[in-house]
Image (cartoon, rainbow, N blue to C red; front, side, top):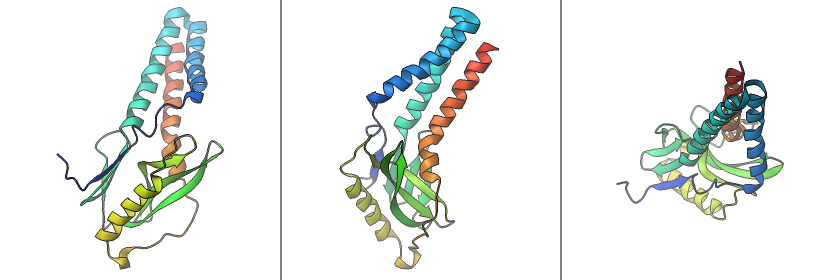
Amino acid sequence: MRPVEELEFSAAYRYRPYWPDARQLLALLAFPAACGYTTAGVLGGCMVLAGTGVVLGLWHLATSRARTTVGAAGITVSHGIGRGRTYGWQEVRWVDAAAFVELKEPAEVARITLANGRRRTLPGLSRSRRYPDSGFAADLRRVVGWWELRTLPASRIQPSEGRSLTPLMSRHLPDVLALALGCAVVLLTVN
């Protein structure tokens, strides 16, 4: 059992299905099935549809298992595959929220800046119009409070604001991978 003082932010309940995306999901399933059906018949269409369904299921499983755990050892970031990576408090130089635009809508995500200058987003700690979270600011303050209690003021270095692709990549990498895998399934089934 985990100690009581750990904070855990799971993406499972935050990233629930967004029903306006159902049209896109149906199109995503119908297109490969139609391509498979026209080239390989009913069996080909079913195989492509099943392959696409497996890829989407794995993507959904990974995003629903994404989480951030804040504890005495540091911040553990898991994007849904594997146990995740723990960044010790001595590695974390800054904790803040990054604002960006996702699908033409403003969004915010919590992130950490490491000693080597790299930034990592914290899954489960975000808000947007699509996935509103009224407790985002309070949760971010709790994480910052943990960080401030476990680091010396001299080790807290605010990074310069440069263009970072971290929020963009962490948000869209699963989509790009799912699309690439879906295309690969279609190409392998058709040929």
